[in-house]
Amino acid sequence: MDKKVTISDLMDAKQAGRKIVAVSCYDYTTARLVSQSDVDMILVGDSAAQVILGHDTTLPVTMDFMVTITTAVRKAAPAVCLVADMPFLSYQTSIADAVRNAGRFFQEAGAQIVKIEVTAAHLDVIKAVSDAGMAVMAHIGIRPQRITKLGKLKAEGTTAELAVELAALSQKMVQAGASSLLLEGTAREVSKIVTQNSPVPVISCGSGPDCDGQILIISDILGLNTDSKPKFAKHFGQLGQSVIQAVSDYANQVRQGTYPDDDYCYHIKPGQMEKLQQMIANLS
Image (cartoon, rainbow, N blue to C red):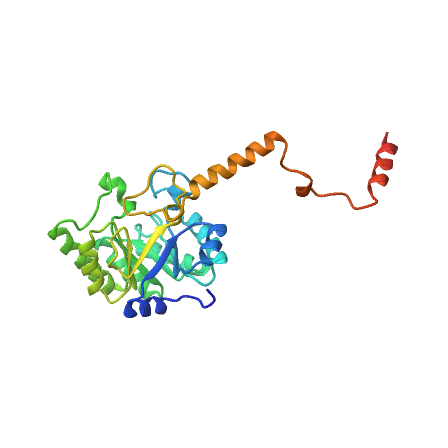
């Protein structure tokens, strides 16, 4: 991919009925590989707290951490549309904090969009960030940052009443200035209604095929999770087992003395060995 994917390109894709492909990843090496595939967008998600740092929730990651890894991904993938996730307490404390912290992603990390997990209480935040000249992706449906208040996360929009509430919220977010939506864990039927009525691109994270695009975490795509995965996640590779096998082969060769052999060693320049032996002899 040579030409940088912009928000305008995402709008064009929606209007043309062309699906938007997004991936969540968090580091330079992985983003470099992802950028060589045919994807439109990378989201540097606060799910890095779980995938990279091993936490149980997304809550522990900080702004500094998120800015650092977003910067790394941008360096690796200069042409994709880059979305940065606003972490817990980076926008809930005040509107001023929200605008300031969002701005860091644009100024320091090269992001093109910031994603914010929202309820109706955050309409003023979406408006303020958008009014400050920054593109915002409003994340509705399942909101992992609310795990402490909710106790557990469950599918959203599964009753008519909840569906109407979610559809209304999506419209309010667009009216407040959201330039895209992310629906997580939302009933397929509701996601279809939201997408059909949305003037901006709608990305599905476990919300069915009828949205304008799809996003999965890279570890799920590659099958790096050897234990469990969300209901909606599909493994498109089985790299977890491949990694285990490769590292086991490495360990076996080290223990057997077959790695490294001569082909994997640096050598003294020709004609220097005799000189070296004489110099060592002189030391004694």
